[in-house]
Image (cartoon, rainbow, N blue to C red; front, top):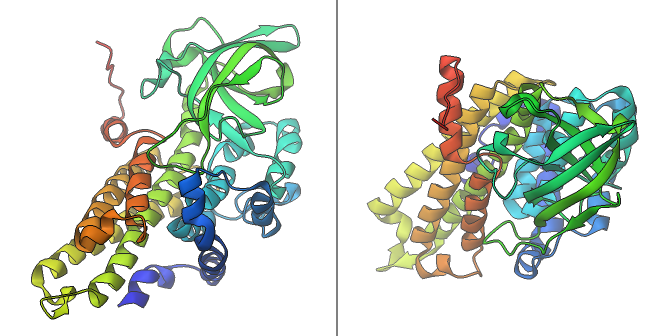
Length: 394
């Protein structure tokens, strides 16, 4: 049974995908699992040498072009790697996630040749990182309420404003910044550009002390009359839909992080209930335990099928926003439910740090909030299904 749960979709993967999954699994268990709990306890970001290790292994450029050092592979290749790493160490998986489904991928899909050539090679090598900066203190789920501005002034943009909930904030080398670039209301005035972290006028708040997500830095980023070369423009105002379609890939990576957390909780629970005894027999012998484990299996398998469907539909391009929202919402909710059930089946042991279940549960809630909450995904599902938008402000 354990082998089936460990690799439920291997039969549907290509030989290459099975090989990279096995390689990532070994790397996660042998190299990243031992320090993962300590990094979480100390809130330690993934060391730079570990990011370069991932680059040397070719894991930071799986979906990025060969001309810049990547592999140009379908997004599902990256997701199977993210899943295996995230089962053991979310900070390590986050690096692969950000490069292959995050802002670097948006730059690759929407950026010009110059922008791609300047930024992607170093990211693929692991020498640099890029974070996405969308949310603001007063613009979270309502992203189009953002007020950070980028005003063209000759051959530069002048950027002013503040961003919040920036995963990688204070540690990234560049920020893919969403900003208001025209006086057009709502989404029509928003575009995006790449801002180097060492540009004068960029500053940072204190690192957030989050319930989960430990080892993944997060802080406010401030822009005080920051001059950004016009050549760093990714998309001008009026292409917000393109940006958020590209952001669907990040949501697909997010869904995979949640899937990994749920699968890890299931794997640990299956092992535990066969070893733990109560009233003289393993607790798996009790029907209540069997029913709970069955529910966990069904939920994890359903989430995986939805994530893989969206990934296969994307191929080497962009996924269906509808399929991604369904997959993300399902995977996010699954991770929260399955880790909660895992705590219950572990009893008091599930509430200790020793078994790692509480860490999975804390991270499950973090990934559900990141990239658009389950509530927002539900509104997106209906919007995409009906082909219309809903004005939540009236």
